[in-house]
Every structure is written in C-alpha cells, then in structure tokens.
Image (cartoon, rainbow, N blue to C red; front, side):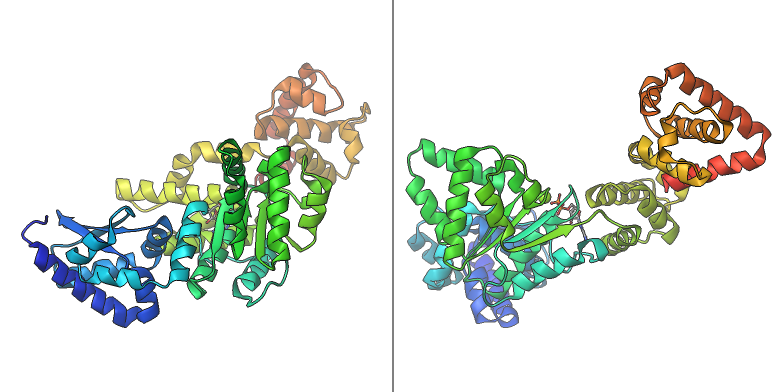
Length: 461
Ligand code: ADP
Ligand code: MG
C-alpha cells in the first residue's frame, strides 16, 4: 500500500492530521469537509485521498488541501504532496473498517448531503483563483463588483435577477465564481449552482430525449442560488428558452436568487424572446466596461504579487499600455514574460518583453481602426472628419488625409485597396502615393516628422 508505511501506521498518521484539522477549522467544517475523505494510499510521497463528490473535491482543493498536506508532512516527511479525487461508489461498511475517521462521514448532516448531490449533478466546478479577494476593482467594474458582493453577503434576496454583462475576458465568470465561493463558504447548507447556459441547454435537450424532463425541472427548482453564465448561448434555441424561462420564473417566485451573465445587455440580446428580456431587465443590470489603463496596471501588479515575482514597473506600464483588449490576454502576456525569464534565468527587460510578445503586440496594434486614425488626424489638423472622405483637394485637407492613409498602412493590417475604400472610395494607387509622399516629407521636414510621430504614438498608446 505504501512505501515503508504500513496500513495501520498510515491511518494513525491520517487520524492525527484529522485531529489537528478539526482543532483548526472547527467541528462543523470538519464534519462537512474533512470527515468524508478517505485515504487510499501513499505512493512515492503522494498521498491519494478520495471524496464522494466533485463539489467536495473543489472545495477541499481550494480551501484545505495545502494545509492538509503540510500537516501530513509534519507527521511524516516522506509525504510531500496529496491528490484529492472523486470516488463515490464504495459501500459505507467497508469504509468503516478501513479507517476510523471514515466513520464520521455518516454523520454529515442530511441536508448537506443532498446539497452536495444536487450541486454535483448540475453545477460546473469553480475555479479556485476566481475569488473576490483576487478581483481587482476599478472604475470599469466597480458597480458589477459591488452588486455581486451585495448579493453574496445578503441574507435575503435583494435584486433578482442580477444581470452582469460585458465583453469577452472582462471578469464576468470571475465575479460569478467569486459569488458562489462566498456563499458556499458562509453557508454550506445553501445550494449554489453555477452552470453555463450552453450546459443548461445541453442537459435540457438530453432530458427531453430521455423523457425525464420532470426530474430535470425538479433538480433546478431545489436550488437556492442559481448562476447562469453566457446566456447569449441560448439565443434562438426556442425550446431551451422556454424551459429556461419556466425554471427562471419558478425560482424567482420562490424567492431564490438568480445571477445571469451575457456579452450584451438584456435589451440588446438578439434571438431572445421579449418576455424573457423584460424579465431579465427586471432586477439589477450591471455592466462591466472595457478596462482602463489604471485597472490594467492594478491587475498586473496583483497577478505579479500572486505569482511572487518581481516585475519592474516600467515593464508593467508597457504591458498595460499595449495589451488593451481584455484581462485574459493581459494575464497571458504576463505569464509568458515571467515564464521566459525563469527559463533563461535572466531578468525581464523591455527588450525581451517586446521579443517574447512579438505576435501579441502586433495583434493589439492591429486593433487600431482606420476610423480612429481618421478621427485623431482630423482633430490634430483641425479639419472635419467628413474631409477624410471628401473629394476636396485643397492642401489643408489633402495633406492630413494623406497622413491618415499613411498611418492606416503603418498601424493596421488593412490592404491598400481596403484603405482606399475607407477614404471615400479612393483607388489603391492614391493610397500608395500618399504613403510615399508622407515618407518623403518626413525626411525633409522635421516638424512634419514630429507631427506624424506624435500621432502614431497617440494611436498606439
Ligand atoms: P469573462 O467571463 O468576462 O469572459 P473571465 O471572468 O473569464 O472573463 O476573466 C478572464 C480572466 O481575467 C480570468 O483569468 C480572470 O481571473 C481575469 N480577470 C478579469 N477581470 C479581473 C479583475 N478585475 N481582477 C483580476 N482578474 C481579472
Ligand atoms: Mg466567461
């Protein structure tokens, strides 16, 4: 069973670990989380522990695994890691004989057991990093954060539903998981379900096929808090929408809390029935805006701290300036830079950052649109936006127009014909001419060169 440890020794060790855990976390938490664990053996320093449900596994991994491991390591320094996995098929009697601590499992309160069951059947697992503590609050997300926090802490239902919306990678899922973690932690007896709308749809369709929609409905209706992510996915799926609507109404009528996310506001969701839209609009609607430079910088600092790495302010500022699309990409950029520096064993510099993120930076640069360029350039030279498209050939408008074409070529991935089209349907040779002309002027007129450079930096920043 183990290397050098007998079964009896193993269980004696485990019992001592359990005893210390019980003192640390209290009787209630001990009974809910630690007692149902079963030690399956130790191999090469890896202790394998099973728990009956996925819900339990997620919870234990997020909250207790590190502590358990270190306590066990104190008992027996050959044990240096633990693995928690799901196994629920074992008869209780055999378990009792095997481990004294296992006997506690039967004492888990009945309500907690059913909760775990429903949660386990329906809920997707929660990411342990997605907590309120790890969420950086700034202007673009403060309202959505405050609303989520309020619901997580409320004793009774306040706004129903809470509807969170915003673009990709701005923290919707993070906030929902944080809300779920918070409620589960505060009151493990409440049934909190987190599911993507896509999963909901899939399960409903399966229930239809297997002709057990009744039990499908029952499951959802025993839920205290239901979080449904990415609801835009059920747009246009009539029967799923219908079922969703019924489940939704039933839960709201029973005073259960619902939280929904989508990439658009309820009114802007296409392919969603009017009555569902208006119901979604009934509670509190909170949007997450695009990130600001300050928020991006804050997030980078927080992530670096979490990873316990030192990254120079200059580098973080550079990243916050450059990677603007969404937080997921920003995180990815930081991870790549850090991984690279660890691999080659050298500090992160601006040069290596640019090198490592070459492709990502280019993709972000490309996101400058021709319209933005036109707007900036028009404002800079004090001409009207419409002159970017007009046929006027006076130098005072033609020159700025050429600068805008030049910048469009430099800063976007658009082809010459595409650029021409955006400038009042001009020919690609006109664009080519503009690019040459601007290059030439830059070489001979330093004031002009500075103007162009300034515009370029503003657009890239
Ligand atoms: P969405 O669901 O809106 O597409 P996610 O919630 O999956 O976005 O967020 C993408 C990534 O960015 C996740 O790793 C998340 O932890 C991180 N993230 C987003 N917003 C924040 C924030 N304000 N603070 C910390 N991390 C964030
Ligand atoms: Mg998401």
